[in-house]
Amino acid sequence: MTDTLAAADIETRLNALGVKGFLPANEAAVLYRLALQQAPAGTMLEIGSYCGRSAVYLGEAARTCGAFLFSVDHHQGSEEHQPGQDYFDPQLWDAELGYPDSLRYFRRTLAHFDLLSRVFPLVARSEHLALAWHQPLALVFMDGGHSADQALQDVALWGPKVGPAGIFIMHDIFEHPEQGGQAPYIAMQALMAKQGFCVCEREGSLVALRRMS
Ligand code: MG
Image (cartoon, rainbow, N blue to C red):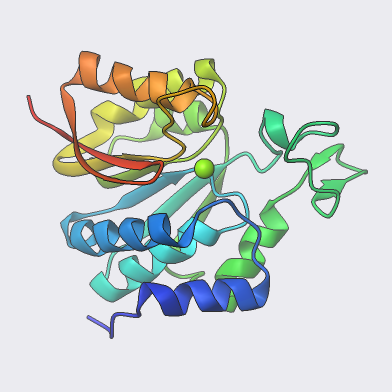
């Protein structure tokens, strides 16, 4: 094992580099602690890379424990990142490609943290990767497409790939519409009802679940 960085130090470096993202520091600290706990048990997968804030926390935990993180994203932006939508960022917009291209920012973030041999970007839709993924996972962090169809599909496809000692972590869980979009919450309920997962930890909108049956 290498030395374990403090979550606050990672946050400070991410902020100094201006890495874009939507993961509050208190939630990131819990994600990091859970990743340090789970990484010795096997491979980790992130659904939704964006510009790499969460991948740095997961990747630093992977490095500490000698594990690896795969991070899947089509890097064309979710619905809310498209022109005219709430989270559109003109800096990401690639006029030639015709979509917000987050891949170059993601690679840059990994390079700044020297994580390119520890975190592997998979440029694909998560449902396509699921067709070819057969390895049990020690940790899944789901923060991908926030439409109901996409979120339900992601829990249906990736829940069964969590190993017996693994955990499934979801971001942007809001019980009430006035707090935020409901799709991840609806998907979490499906994960619990259909696959026997139960909540084992929560911090803000970040919820970790284990399979109990
Ligand atoms: Mg999120």
